[in-house]
Image (cartoon, rainbow, N blue to C red; front, side, top):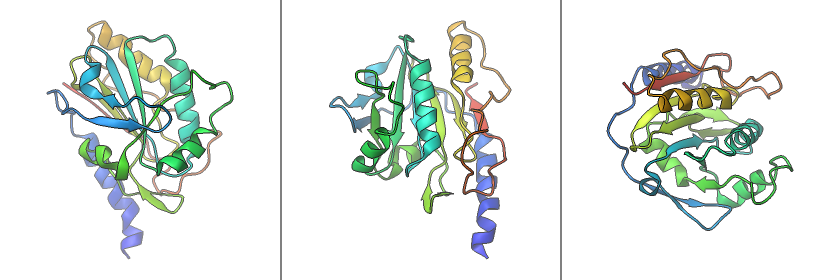
Amino acid sequence: MFSLLRPALAGLVLAAFAALAPASEPIADFTLKPINTDKSFTLSENRGKYVALYFLLETECPICIRHTHEHHRGARGVEDLVQVFIKPDDPEATRKWLARLPQEEAEPSVPVIYHDPEGKLAERMGIPDGYQFHGIETHYPALVLIGPEGDELYRYVGRNNMDRLAWPALEGLLARHRAGLPLAEETPTPTPAADSQPADSADEKAPGSASKAE
């Protein structure tokens, strides 16, 4: 009985989450260890730049590969943006996953992947969990944009593995904020999913949830 109600309950959690505006005060400092390099990421060391936190799914998610590739390639030359791709998987499993990125992502341009053991940072950041994917329960895919002052500007939480914020939408949000304009009220266009694999969630056709700081 509970298993039948779970997708509906997850939808309610996401709906409630979408109604919450991000906190306007600076985010508490944190450090993440890398999986494929030797330099850790510390939030406070990146003040003055935009920071995009990409909370990727656990498991060998093919959509995560495409999403990481799209954003990493799109941000080349964007000097005021730091990208932080985060996976909760075992580091060895993540290294195997990283090897599946397109071949053009060769050194030294391969994206750095950071480890979030047991999804603790995702939990602290309020990323909803309970998403069933490939037989594993994990948090939902999400992108959190942090401003140069260390405060959260925007977040996008997908309803499933196919629902991601596309790079052009993030690029547009950055351009608006640099220009001193308010971030758009409407939900940005998610990544097209025409060639993606079906999700395991009952919410696979529901739109993503986005929220911005006031």
